[in-house]
Amino acid sequence: MELSNRNVTVYGAYGHTGRFVVAALRERGYVPVLSGRDPRKLAAVAGADEVRPEVRPAAVDDPAALDRALAGSAAVVNCAGPFAATAGPVIEAALRAGIPYVDVAAEIEANADTFELYADRAKAAGVAVVPAMAFYGGLGDLLATAAMGDWTAADRVDVAYGLDSWHPTAGTRLSGDVSRQRRGGRRVRYAGGRLEYHDDAPSTGRWSFPAPTGERDVVAGFSMADIVTVPSHLPVAEVRSYMTAEAARDVVAPDTPAPVAADATGRSAQSFVVDVVVHRGGEQRRAVAGGQDIYAVSAPLAVEAVDRILTGRTRTTGVASAGAMFDAPDFLAALGIVGVVNM
Image (cartoon, rainbow, N blue to C red):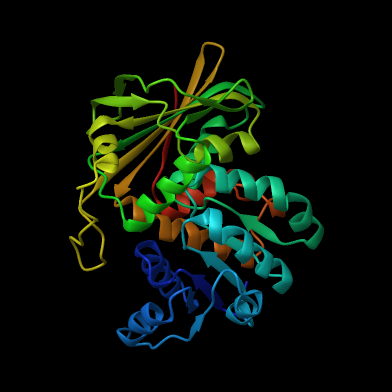
């Protein structure tokens, strides 16, 4: 399908993930329009770019500026955390403009808000709104949906993150702080068909990841956005999350440095595997994805989503997670990051 408008606004374009998204859009033939809250940072990013993209600063509390930032664009990708502050205003602007909205939010509460507050309005407007279209939330949901296959329901979905390290960005730290404040420092999980908040300490265990990662110590109940996206459309009573112990230590340690580029694309040397197991009775189905740099991989996920929405390759409209909006096996195959094995 030939598109007449290939402009895509990237809100938070000067952030770590935002820069990857800008590059990925260009690789796919789109024209990024740079937006965000800080005019100086936007100007610095644009000035260092040989293409000299259009820059449209906009504060989230300035609806008119947000409207200007989205004017003439075919879609908007929100990369600016904390999403508790940015998602609502940018979604409102997208609805006013009548264009699709995609974000890379990992904040559990912000994603839950998007489903709760915008489902009816986005559906009525015929506008696609896809939250958590990133490493956390989007990838796990696509894997779970692919593994589910022809099953109409499941007892439990396990999502295990095999990160060899986790050097958080400043945005990750800020978003994590906001989430912890919103839940009063409690931990959250999805069980009994709903989000539950608890004061108990996290438990540890072992997880056997596919080779070459192998068996690793993990922290159980290390919940990420998958506990919102997966049960938003899959009939499952429980979603359990696990994180390799070394990555869990990294992300909470105050002195862990930010990611450092290890190649010409700006990716860090971090490697990951996401291992998803769907349980039904005594049966299991598994889907696995691996790659390099959890922040960098969010960009092709978000841009593939934009491309599929704009070219009409969607399964629904309104607010929907990745697995509900797209053909999960086809989406994953297009990115070359998945293998599905029935167990």
